[in-house]
Image 1 (tube, helix red, strand yellow):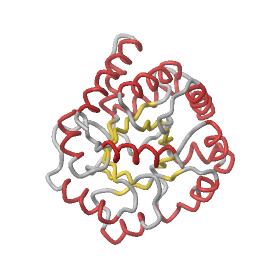
Image 2 (image 1 turned 180 degrees about the vertical axis):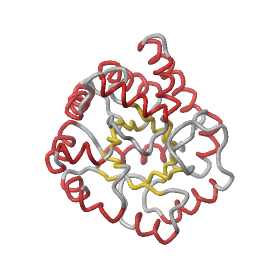
Image 3 (image 1 turned 180 degrees about the horizontal axis):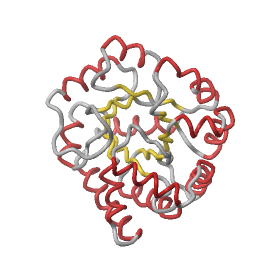
Length: 264
């Protein structure tokens, strides 16, 4: 069984919701990211989304855009990220890893080779922001052949009919975008979010996870009432960016994760 499926089974058995944390790989460098992943998993992260840096991350707000630029400037590559994943697995880190990427990076690597290399390294799924439902055949067959989940995305603007089509054969979990716009922290959540998540849970054959804009334990607690898990990204990336040293940032991020895990 894929580690993602195992994780949600474990969360259900324990009566808790899954905490999914996004990290911007290579910011400030891959050595720091590797240690960050170790620490946030130990602090209570259930699933790690590993953001692959890209020059034009159109779904991301300024915090993650800047992190991607710093990661690229530090020499971060997809091959380097896979090597980091292999080291983490060799060190005993068992949390599921989802590569969060844009298609240009994957296409450049070659999907057939990437799916095989990612599975061998210890990746469990991929989330490709800019490949719509109609183009999934560009990536889905190679992922499926290697036991990797393609994480589907639905947005507040996705019609119920389209959501049913997207989710009909979904695996892993569905990522429900909580707000219109790009990633980034928000001071408050949309009033209609509860209804959106309830509809997604009715339509989805897999767990429903909500992300974009969740930046505090209180927001995570509210979202978890209707979702099977929550994603927090920009708030973590910002902590790393604003820290005086990578070590201080990692310590701050681990404490933040503990506060999130405690409410789920």
